[in-house]
Image 1: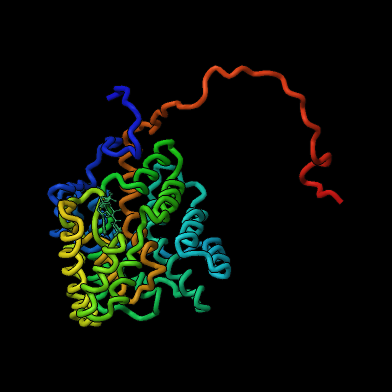
Image 2: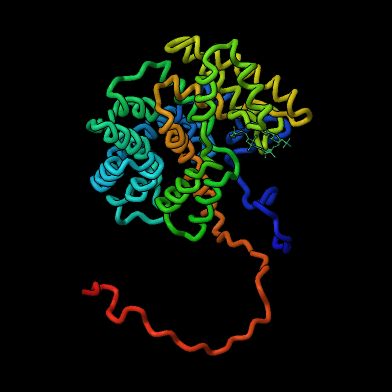
Length: 393
Ligand code: COA
């Protein structure tokens, strides 16, 4: 369709790609991942199986799944240049997303002949992002990075490289469910960024690095942190109503509630609530989980009272916060952990875009001045007479 359209602010509702990867139905509260309902597949599949599903549009057989483990394991170690950058970023106390963006950009330094069609870059990027986050976080704390364990899967390795302890199966399951749940979500801003970059036939490292830059912004990567802080600030179930009423009466927003697309409960919140419940039952602070459930129920009830007709329901951030906290991840690593999952979606979208062979090049509506007439002006004398590379003495 090449029909000329008028300006659409924020591209809202503009269909800019066709995809087999995920479908978001905000009215019905549905998220479909390559044909599977998120609530069906996310709590059961391994992360490696989900990656295979997005990258091949079908689930792997046993041999293909084993090969996926091998392919990721062989690329998990970081090149020295990435480690050095992470060291510098940690010393400068740069935020974790900045450190991850810097490390991602050099992830292909040991793949000098990697062309845009070469899948080794896909594996190197996906495999190395969790290694980079874990190494950065340990360096920030003055600790030595822990090398990946080739016997562990993607989710287990991430937890292992953060602490050095082999995670329980309940923890690995909880993290895999989280990663699977947020692996892809339609044409969100970072995914669109990845598609725009790869559509120029640039390279996968540029696409993923650009997507990380887009994800970093607070309007996208979001902040599950404030949702968690709210639960902690409430502290006890009996304080919830008073606390939430005060916020709403002051015109403040309740973090973890409401969504631009979902006009019913975000299906990802459902999946993550069940995963958090299982995690906290097996291995966590059950009282915190019960408090969060109470806060959620009170918030939904009060939102209906204060914002009648708005249908403000729990979103993905609320239970993301609880789940990642239950895995002992610090708030600073919440968005980078989201990137660990979404990178698989970015790469799948980039490959899908590349296959179309079509450059993404929208139009802009010109609203500037017209009819200005050029007149010769006197040329000002140069301020510095010496060239820029010779500092004036
Ligand atoms: N708490 C209180 N009120 C909320 C609210 C929330 N979490 N989310 C929306 N509203 C209210 C707005 O104040 C507005 O009320 P008004 O019309 O009386 O002024 C109305 O609902 C519509 O808000 P709007 O910002 O236009 O809705 P949106 O669909 O564009 O907003 C969000 C989507 C996510 C930006 C919004 O729900 C929000 O800010 N949520 C809290 C932050 C959050 O959890 N973000 C993570 C999203 S995954």
